[in-house]
Figure (cartoon, rainbow over the protein chains, first blue to last red):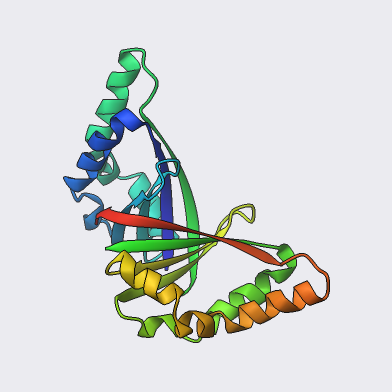
Length: 106
Length: 106
């Protein structure tokens, strides 16, 4: 089993929108082969990043998703937000950092 | 739903033992009310910490576990290792940092 975590630093003014995007997510990732589940984790301390945790049967399934139309579909509204901020000459409201993990015990 | 993550920095020389402890874990936490599942995540980069991810129905279940005999039972061999290093005047082979999260979307 394989886990990918996207560590997302989100600016204060964008948090409500960010949480709303995930609460109403398209579910595109759920259709990918090898996908097991997704958890969106809100930290108890606002200093810490949000964690988007996805479980997969194997790393190849995660890599296939990153290059898929479903990846673009699932991130459509977020990517549009980022583009709008950029066009308005503003700092991006969030930044993301993927890390990958092998599940060595359950 | 509630998630706790223990971020564990583990020294190079202790990693094999650390992984073995989890591979052969007692399963004490599994008996706790409100416990859902556990994942031990090994990072792809040795610079990053291991993540011990536990899912619970609610935070109160996690807090009850931290004060339980099952917590001591589950950490018995690890705690003994730490004590031995301390008695030999050596640096502890690992350090841990719990962070807690609310699951806001799945």
